[in-house]
Amino acid sequence: MRSQCCLYVDAGYLLAAAATRLTGTSLRVGIKVKYEYLIAELIKQAEALAGMPVLRINWYDGAKNALPDKDQERIGALPRVKVRLGRIGPTGEQKGVDLLIGLDMVAQARNGAVDAAFLVSGDDDLTEAVAEAQVHGVQVKVLAVPNSAGEPHAVSQHLLRASDGIELIRPETLDQAVERAVSGPTPKTVPRPGPWLAASAAGPVPHPAKPGPAHGAGTAGAAGAALPHRRSGATLAYQSQTGGKSTIASEYALEDQAITKQIDAVVSAVIGSFLASATEDEKDDVINARPSIRSDLDRALLLDLAHRLDDPDMSDRIRWELRDHFWDALAAATK
Image (tube, rainbow, N blue to C red; front, side):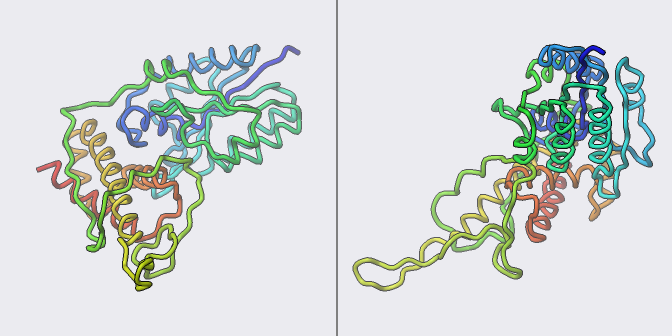
């Protein structure tokens, strides 16, 4: 039997990362995708990298009630494409997709169906499946979406260490396959400071945190503290000449400012992408649903901020501030 390779594509990762690369937010409704072209180019790239033909491309995505939408039906009709659907949970997250990817990858490895695999995902939960496939002699590489700086977008370090290497999807493939979904002029959102900025903040605002892997670890602060996020060191210093205590600018207040800048950026990108692509009825539905934020919008807000802060376990207070800012900025943008 001739050697073959296979592609396992987590569509949630691929499309959210492609949207972030183009629009600054993971909101999928903000982009239009030429699926036929994208899939054909992924197959070409995998065959070139592996030096062997692609058996098939397995396309994994979430679906309401596990029923395919029009795009998923069209993708499933393409040659050498198998669509496997998980579910979409009440808050917009995918359910069962990682399990499907892992089961298929390990089953094909055990059966000797493929000699090499390309995993288009960055999810830490797939690490064990990668290791198991490797036990059966399959070489598994991550095929990641490049961010605007040409680096892998949101790939878990655990997954990266477990894999046999990482390759980037060709930027020109994404440039040709993905475009903004625009139904009207792009709106401008109005940033505003968060209400929990400490009044004693002084000095320049720190540079925003460099985006890190979506699965990076964060440290939560104590309940009831000024900001239950990463804590660092003391906030008092001794004067060398007098030995007396001198209060310096609060590190917490400076961190509050940096977090608020990130919230501003996330909210601006999500609202801008949504309003540029939404119909008037969709806009009205979102506005009239207040205080409930539509699940895909809420998920994009949380995912994008967690990525920017490199903290998937954000405190409730930060989440509250993010959602509160969303409504204020949406009201300002839709006046």
